[in-house]
Length: 409
Image (tube, rainbow, N blue to C red):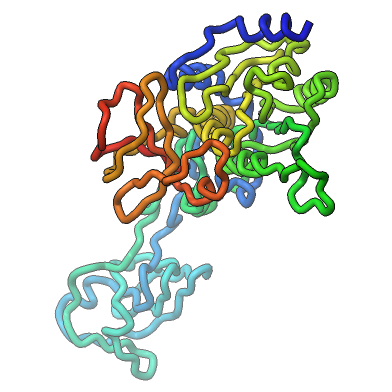
């Protein structure tokens, strides 16, 4: 019965597709899930659903750009002059007296300039004496005033839609008198790790033959970094009945379920079968890449499902290549932006595989991308040192390459 079910699920799609075809199938499913309005203080890293439009002009009125004295051009254009100081204007104040001929106003940065002000003279160029401002020379040059709306006007777009909000964006939005923004909702993601051998890290008196489960921590971090919300992270034994029950529960609460391990065709590889009762429809079942060939992707009802290999390096590489673009798109971004390969130089020959694209773990040495010497799919110490992936296409000519496609891991 199990063998028949495996065939029914895995034969639904061709065994092996290219990386680019698999990435395109992921992108087709990576649509924003909805929006929500949140306070600005919680908006860092979220993707803006609608443009942030200024509710006020900045500055709202003529203000001083520095500490000094507000004056009329007619009073300071002809050389040495002494002007009576008629008052002081502070930022946040309400100085509403006009600037009369023969007078000036002591003014501070950001303070409203009195009506009639033509310029502000820096305080360093003025000497005060018994209520008068002594100006030695004729004044020309910069006016040191900020005109109303010179930063932005009411109705201006401060940040366009579809931007992932940064600290800089938040400054501009707050200045525009906006306290809350509409952002795309975070996709809810559940992670299920399969394996009789897995235990929680740090577990005392670990049973013989068991190992600490490590992959879900890296995959969770990638998902959070790219806009997803982890709603559940579980381990489960290689028991088909139990896995099916857990898969049903997770599909009910998550937009995406990531199942790690059990992706191949071993006697206890039940990952696809766990979702078969939910009507799993595969988009692809294997991808022509190294590492990570057994990665698969499909839909079980309303829930998207990604199956990652159980080897740590394979799992994290495939999560970066397929889960990250999916989460980026579901959270309102563009999935292709998560696969922004950059050309870099290398001085080391990259492993060649005639029937698969190779994604070598690498680090940077100066301006060179250097593949790590240990590329084993189960290696975790080497993985911890990796910062980038180097893609070597199966169509690449043999031998050393000087320019390679790289992706931040």
